[in-house]
Length: 437
Ligand SMILES: *[C@@H]1O[C@H](CO)[C@@H](O)[C@H](O)[C@H]1NC(C)=O
Ligand SMILES: *[C@@H]1O[C@H](CO)[C@@H](O)[C@H](O)[C@H]1NC(C)=O
Image (cartoon, rainbow, N blue to C red; front, side, top):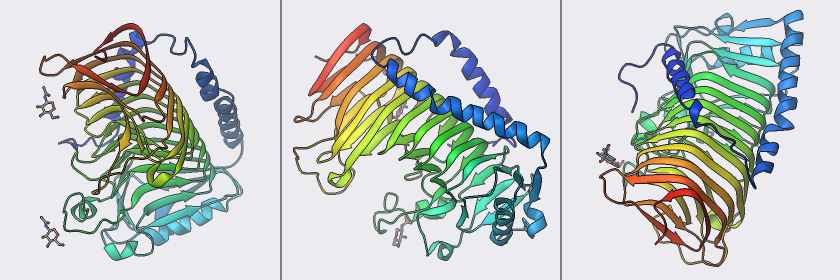
């Protein structure tokens, strides 16, 4: 749910996160002691280390050369409830064509309204987009006629930072009301993702509050080297398809220190994603952290090297989930879920290879996305349902190399918890409860 008294700044978020980070300190252990050592290497080197060097280098050069400040108000933005899109467009054009590093400023204590807008690169130099105030989506349905899938898009931009402590509000209520998931007599149509980054390289998105997206809040699509840090993402628990952070076709992405409370997946990771790390995440309400769905419509999918480390799930429908449709192909492999706390989560641990999110039943099929090398380590807490751990794997492509280590999951009603295991090749280490019967 949206906080009753939304914080004016993200200050509270940072207090929460500082606490969260501090109190998980004792939790740390060597997370990569065994066969997933290579995952760590791939995630931490070399892509990220060169990225850090690069960002450090670019900030040190900018401090000695001139920085151009570009305030949207100087381009005609009024923040008076009318549309400010033209001003933002002009400000972007100016910044993107600047020879020096440019900083676009969206002033604080003001609310700017935007129609669907694409900020396109490539730009001549590095750019920062500092959102101190609030950006709100247009409520006119006809503004979205050309493209119902996107509201704000950053396309093909390198070395971009988007930050500032402000709010990006998708004004989603109108879209949720019209969703076929809310009102069955409405046709199923797409709604816009609030903010999409496409084909971006060396991107930092930090210190922002994304709220009430029309559909997904934040998507990284075909990007390379991404950091998403200190984000707050909120929408009501019953808002349809409002994923927090969606990762597709993206390599080398770190999501850290973020609070995500929405009506769908807190984080969803789909095909083409590789080297994905999510650390210090607070999730719920929502559907948990998902890899997938993969393989819909007999498609091929490839996801590898995913680390979810230190996360708390409260009242979510899933904790950590891998979901694939029957009939797909490809793989989801080298995945670590560790140091997780579950609080009244319906399916704390789940692999579902019979995922079927449609009205018609899904027919039995031979092929499947292969799930392999998945570690679940140090996972504690309570399940809202009887089955705390569920492996519903494909008969023709059983789940391979699944390791359970130090897991204690109880039922929230103090009933014994159960595990359900189908077509899965499991190994145990340390204490594991419940176990397959
Ligand atoms: C659902 O949609 C139908 C058709 O647009 C509309 O007549 C009806 O009032 C809607 N129901 C609710 C509860 O909004
Ligand atoms: C657990 O979650 C369910 C809904 O999934 C809710 O009805 C119940 O009250 C919750 N229990 C506790 C102890 O929070």
